[in-house]
Image 1 (cartoon, rainbow, N blue to C red):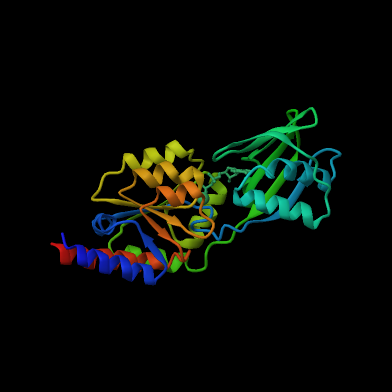
Image 2: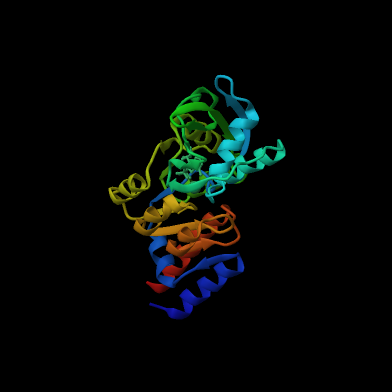
Length: 275
Ligand code: ADP
Ligand code: MG
């Protein structure tokens, strides 16, 4: 192996704002024929906004949001930011929550006063194509919050470019529900996607993949097992979770998806030099 060449490649990547944690990772990347993406925060901007507040029964919208926001103070998920921001903008008084637990890829639960509150992924309102969560208080449905997270503007072009470079098997692996995943897949031009994936299911899809090599791009806590298992794990740098950044082989510190085709080329140039 040529250490100078890999150093040159690493420094070239660094100039683009990409952290490559070792030359070996680029060499592995050069042989990949598949590219799997996480959805939220990876193909989307990761800046969702609450666009639908749908209380049930006699609940008021402010009540619903305040309860959801109470739980989300304990979460670093992009959806948590969206819910807190909406509650703030409506001037809700957010009660204190305790015993907050996040369940990766599903939502958060905890206590407000004596009540047990859950804010969790919902299959209801699928027709909207929004990412939807339901709020339950002692099991009673208080309502739904619908969130929209825009596709990254560069995503479609990047997907076209990597496919043209021979990465034929391009897919989305998402923890979100089917309608929201399908909508985003259509927007960015990906025809194969898997919705409702728990972290171990993302891992399973990667481990069972047959081919010359697989690149996985993700950002969340729920992506860490997949980032580790993939031949090449790439994390989004700006809003990526600590565990994703630590586990990945390569970090897009510049947070630009459009660096992916450049990295594919760079890895192949380097691997040619080494051989
Ligand atoms: P992705 O794999 O697309 O990045 P995640 O696995 O992070 O998505 O999340 C999957 C789903 O779990 C979300 O669409 C949401 O419904 C639910 N979820 C995860 N974290 C939270 C949270 N903090 N609050 C509410 N819902 C959440
Ligand atoms: Mg994500």
